[in-house]
Length: 107
Image (cartoon, rainbow, N blue to C red; front, side, top):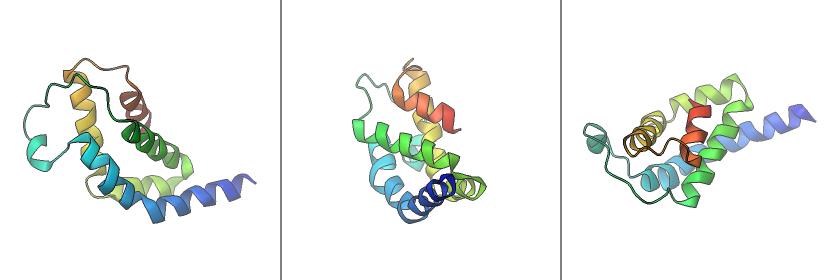
């Protein structure tokens, strides 16, 4: 049973990761390569629920084994975007929000 669950998570990762990153994580985090070179913006609003759920999904996929973690590291802009979200949280002293906690566990 455990093997089937691991296999299912890996298949989800391989099929959906890129879509989750380009459709949800990057746009909702407001990350861009240009913005990442500067200071993170002030943020008073909490992150959108869809971003919270997407980061939770990525965190859960990271436990699908060595290949899954490699796929996560290889996904274009994912790690940079997650670091950006962390930087925004640090700048705005939002260390305890759900997205920051998911990313801390993931990284």
